[in-house]
Length: 298
Image 1 (cartoon, rainbow, N blue to C red):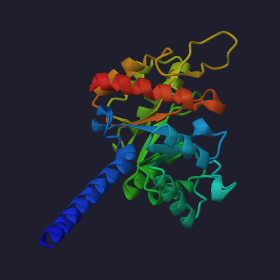
Image 2 (cartoon, helix red, strand yellow):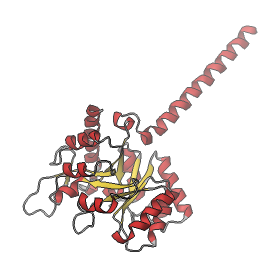
Image 3 (cartoon, one colour):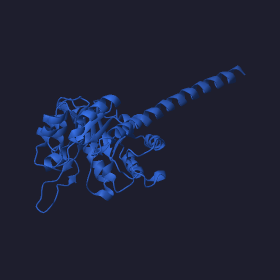
Image 4 (tube, rainbow, N blue to C red):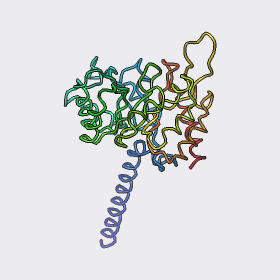
């Protein structure tokens, strides 16, 4: 009888230990995507995010599924992205009510994805800026990718300090106020270091700028990137389209080396504007290139 009791106690202890181990493993696996600590790049403060505009032909709900398929734990949502699912034709933006914001944040979290930012946000209505910061705060975003009207900078800086949310300024092509690093620095050089660049390396090159020089000019002020590679310019084509990283003219390896030399810590947002209907295989290859190059770097 004593032997039976002894064996029962041992089995209970073993079962408890096993369950605890599984629980810890499960927690680790559940957070692994968001933390991205399994890669050397992730351990050194580099994070990969998905720009939802890459999937603008699909709903935001579908974009989350694609982001999960890619193994990414972060997403930047473009304002106006149709939500889909239970939210139907509603779009992402400042008009979402409190319940919808909470639901969307949890819906993404349940898929292992954090809505880290929104963008590229642009408005001529000064009063909308605080509404955007409130949205970002409600959804626990880290930054807003945007191109503010020059007249709004004092207000925006005050909101950055009030809500403790960063501003990452994107560079669309001309006539954008920020198409070159010099124009951006003229506006932010003497402002909070929570205001910086969302460096779109493809747009720089399309505007005839050297992306390496642009990155170096913005050393210490880069918060995030719209990272990509683009094709050579061809006669008869309106724009140099996006290509799989490493197959274009931007020299992905050297850009990553440049950012490491700057001790950059931040977010690489994948914005892949090509093969719209079936871009996931291409983006998977881009991620593979990124992982290969960063494994060599760190």
